[in-house]
Length: 324
Image 1 (cartoon, rainbow, N blue to C red):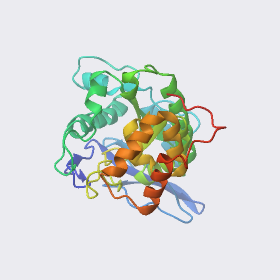
Image 2 (cartoon, rainbow, N blue to C red):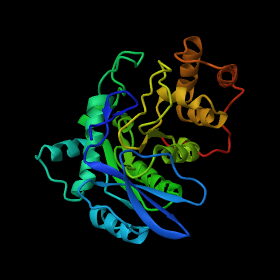
Image 3 (tube, rainbow, N blue to C red):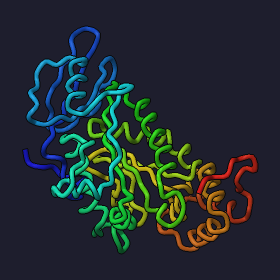
Image 4 (cartoon, rainbow, N blue to C red):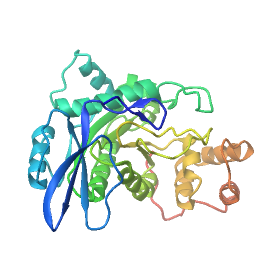
């Protein structure tokens, strides 16, 4: 099967994996079926697990229990209905793919997933795009983060019909890991990022988890972002461009930055966290944004930002200081 592009933006899907959906209901045995691409999620009495396996794995009538055993055999031990590889720098992943180093803590299948994202990072995030609407790379910080070895990634497999509770647990664990991982202060702390890849899940689950955890992360001075093949969030400088499309569904964690105003301006609670973290610098950024916005500013957003500038919208006094 020829590789498919993601969102029409030239991002190839993995060639070495096939999507397998395990379906079960109370009236009959579970079964696994091979699909060229993930369909819409079943609803009602059906439960589903979207799983990605090597094409060489024989398929047939597989029960969910035995399927978990298969996944454990090729992915590693399953703990609390999910497995998570160690975080490794994507720079090291590229070195492993070139054969210059060996990542013994990651098996070949998961290394392939990490490699797919590493190549997407280099070929897409670290380059400009004709539809970006501004000069520079799609992500202006990724190339330096890669070079400094501060862009980390891990592969997570979830074995639940509803993966969101396990995904929440993984991301809260990742938040703690991020906060304790050096560098914790200074300019390089702004380059640090951690990606959790969910190759066996559909993008809608990633969207749901990002939405549910966003405020929690912002309150810690962190940002959590969602990427997947069907992500519809528009670019800041071109509403027709969809910059958050990736070949593997993933959630990204990084430190909040002064330039994140555009992602926080739609919520009173998030804007208060932004003001608390950056103080006068945040007020200057808001003033500059109001004078020269680079996207559509609704009357509600304009009123919120003006309230912040004139001291009407301020952080709550009893809030704990946001870590920097």
